Length: 210
Image (cartoon, rainbow, N blue to C red):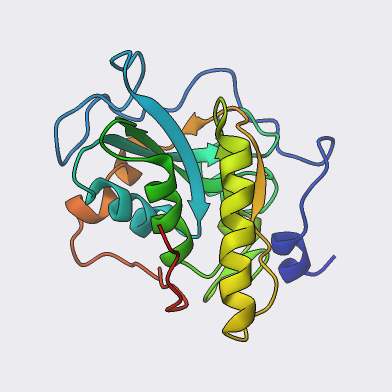
């Protein structure tokens, strides 16, 4: 198996790295706004999970939105329990790099978060995002509660716009939310801690109508 194929092909549960029982130390509080990054959150808040390539830039997109309560980066959608960043990079966990967004739906709508998601990356690239190649960089929406139908409808809406603009089919994975594993503390709000750090995030220039 070539290295590139290994990075872009999902492993089976039997092939995936074993991981560990204990959670990774992720820290407790958001480095930008000081809010907690772990539940329990205030009861009126809701959660959303998105993957759109490298999670450093993706998280910043959401914490910059007014009235988003908290964000955290982590891993989801694969098989390895409590993986490390190094394990993710092997392509043998099945997880995507994702962002947990905690928001007040009376102030920030889920539809508004979806607009940020679609406009901020290229959702047509399969197991990559720009120069970042691997299963961990795939585009995903992991849905909480009643979010699934809204997410699917938003994909259909954005696909029509992309098709009209000459872009190929969306490859975004949309499904009910699997377990979210928090990433290491160093990766939380990484671009706030490292302002000159890498961010390869970039959209297609096609607006999603809110």
